[in-house]
Each structure stands twice: as C-alpha cells, then as structure tokens.
Length: 512
Image 1 (cartoon, helix red, strand yellow):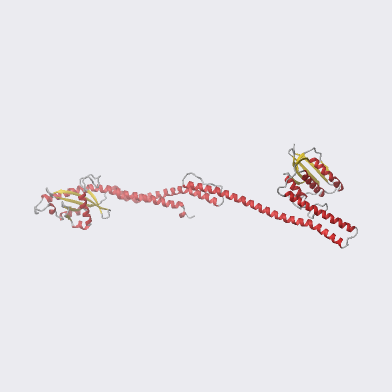
Image 2: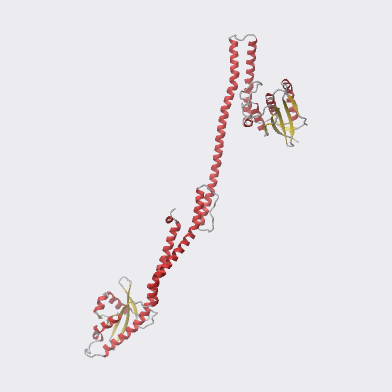
C-alpha cells in the first residue's frame, strides 16, 4: 500500500492542518488584535494630549482674538480652515468641526478628499448618541470621547476619532473632532512581527513532529488489527487482536476476534464434513469394488459346477457315457448340486447374520465341552491326512454366547486349518482364561499368510489360493460367516503368522 493512501498519512495531514490553523489564529490575534489594541491605546493617549492642547489653543484664539472679524459672527463662522491645514499635515491628523446643531460642518479640502461622506454622518450620529459614562477604549482613562469608525457594512476601519465640545459663549459652542489612522509604535509588537516567521517555522516543524507521533499513536492499534486480519485472511487463526480499550477500535478488535473464532469453527466443521465425505466416498468405492468382486466370485463359484453338470448331462443324454463313466457322471452331478446348494445356503446365512435386527440365541455354556465335541468329529479326518490333532489341557470355562453360532465358528476355523495343513503337520487347539474373557486359538502348521492379505481373508469369497482349488470343497464363505458371528458377540478375533504356520483366534466373555 502506498504511504500517501495510508491512515497515518491522512491523520498526519488532518492533525497538521488543525494545529497550523490554530497557530495562524493565535499569531493573527497576537499581531493584529492584541498588539494593535495595545499600540492603539498607547498611541491614542499620546495623540489625545497633543490634540487637546492644540484644539484648546486654537479655539481660544478664535474666541478671544476677534481682530478683523465681525463681532456678530459666531465662533463657528470665525473658524478658518486654512489655519488647520498646517497642523493636519504635520501630525497626520484630520479635523472635522460641527456647530452646536450639528448642521454645519467645517472640513479642509484634503480631509474631504480622503474621507467618505458616510464617515462624517457616522461621527455626527456618534456625537448625538454619545454617553459620557461609556468610553470606547475604557483602559485609556481620558475625558475625551474616543471611538472607531465603522463602514456601511459594520466592518471596523482604521480611523479613530477624538471628540471634544468647546463652549464659545453663554449660548454657543462647537464640536471639534480629530481623526487619526492607527499607528503601531510598540517595540515589542515590531519585534513580534520581525521574528514571527521564525517562530512560525519552528512551530510548524514542531507541529509536524507532534502530528507524526499522534498519527502513529492513533494508527498503531489499527495497524495491529490489520496484521491480525491479514493472518486470518490467510487462514491462520493462531493470533487474536489485543483489546486494550473499550472504544471503537476495541470494539472492532473484539468483532474481528469473534469473526476469527466463528470462521475457524466453521472451517473446522467443513474440514470434518469434507473428511467424512471423503471417507464415505472411499467406503462407497470400496463397497462398489466388493460388490464387483462378490458378483465375480459368485459367478465363478456357480459357473464351474454348472459347466460340469451341463457337460455330464449332455453326455448321459447322448449315451456317450457308459458303465463306470455314467456312474461317475451321476456322482459328479450330485456332488456339484450339493455344493451349489451349500453355497446358496451359506450366502443366505451370511445375509441373515449381516442383516439389521438379527438377534443371537444367547445362553451360558462350557466352551471346553463344545471344543471337545467338535474336535472328536475331526480326529478321523486328521488321521486320514496324517495330521496331528493336539488339544491343550484346560479346566471347565463357562462362557456366554450363542453356542450354535460359536460351533459354526469352530467348524470353519478347524476346516480352514485342515485345508491348509500339509501332510505330517499339526493342528493345536488351546484355551487361555483371562478372568473376564477366554481366548480360543486354533493353530496349524504350514505356510504363512502374506501380511498384506491377512486383513482380507475375512472378505466374502476371498482365498489365499487364487486358483480357487476345490480339493477340499470349501465355498470361500466360512471366514466371512465367522466374522459376522464374532462381531455379533462383540468378540476380538484375528489371524497371525507363527514361526511354523498360522494361528486363528477369538474371544468370548466368561462368567465367574
């Protein structure tokens, strides 16, 4: 921002203008009013004395020296204007003399040329309205009335009038008025005029300095507010405006702080909403991906048995299969039909378990008895495949849950272990009582699961073996069903790699 557009510069100009104007008024009053009044007063006193001596002498000569003048003439008629001119020229004074009725006027030619006729009428009105108890310059303390002439527009002129009445006989008198311009003779006034320019320059410099300080002092809190507002504009809400005074600037700072707080909260809410929306979009993309994978998996799971059934059915229809081949065809069709039936049932069961509002049949049962019962069913299968089946020694453990669904989990975990245990391998079942819950583990020897795939083995139709080998008749839904059952029980579950294979585990709440 350019300096001449800043608030400091504008405040500086305003303050400087005000102070300089104030200075000019003071100088004007001092030089042209106070000094003038003082000098007029002093000069007037001196002039008054001088004029009064002259007029007294001049009038006395007219009255008492009647030589060459008709004795019947009045004193006003005896006045000769020529005798006034020398005194006027020597003292820069102009005389105007009136008779007692203020009708006739004696005035020299020079005076007549200098003065507006209005001034003569003004003097005449002043004499008529004069009150001896009022002086126009009361500090002079003289006996002669003194006043200033004002023009037609009521503006004071530079002329000051002395007026005195002289009695020339028992019934006659004249008014003698002397008009003088203002004269400045005071030494102090002249010195003031001489050094006024230097004083003014010093004061102007001082005013500029004071104006800069005042402008910065006034603008400083505004500059701080502007700094904070700039940070807010760049979405940095770490700074707040400092509130020192309860004035307009303090109110502005408070408003900006409130705006900053509200804006920060709003942006935080928008950020959270945006983050939630992003998560929802990611979840939607994940669901779409899972849906496509699910459809692909279902299609693959049904396509193979349908193809087999169709092929063997056509061979039977065309009498291509005879004897043992015909029996094999019937057996294959039956096996694949049962497998599809199991797949459909598993899908329906998974859908039921994942549906909203599904409730478990909760009861108390001994988990060790359930494990023994299920493991007995797999001893022959394990023996046929040359797999060692190990059961850890454990006491009775009473748990709470749905025993039917937990048995499904155990079946699925043991089936999965048998399917992935090599010949001469082992499967170990163990219980670990943790006071408030029990941990059931099924470990089998064999290959480890890739760490990147461990979290995905619980997905529908997901197999570590990408070829989807049907050697042991799995549908790929066992772990997905187990996951749904365990989540309904609020159990912890998972799979971890061990030095010799893989361990699946889950927990159940115990009853003490």
